[in-house]
Length: 208
Image 1 (spheres, rainbow, N blue to C red):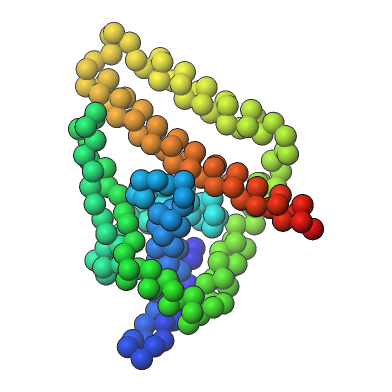
Image 2: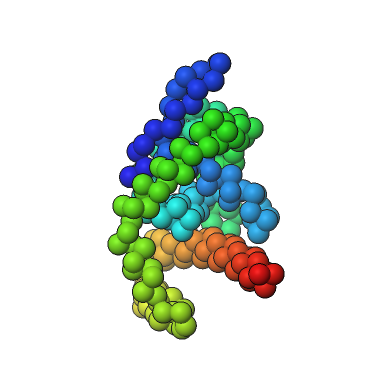
């Protein structure tokens, strides 16, 4: 999916860049520029969630991380690490640099329709997913879909944690919980962005 190439033609170069690489680069820029992202840092799992939610691309870590590595090698993004004091665990985050932003601008200016066409091709491959989303009820879908997942997840954790649980297992569970909290925080950012988008749509509808 999204393997289509976009040709870049200028006086300085004549090359192609894949839509997949472009989307990952755009995701970093969009997440970093999100006003709700006050830390201005972007993690790998946030990129994957953004690609799935905005571009209907259910990308796997085995696909996105090699792209991130290549983007760093090409000096289009910066990769940094942050040591968490409470868990003594390293976190890797990404930031787009001026060369990455220049490439995005070049893609859009030289190929104003190429990226949109490639995305539409990707969307056509996701018709089943789109139809599934369309079946979600307009009301109470939070209770129907989200609440059971959270309750089940918390129940599983409560059963795994006890005084009899070995220390190494407790440490592993603790790290997994911390990772879950990070993903929930990332989800909160995305959900808040949908609220902002809905408010914008409501404002447009009111004017009309």
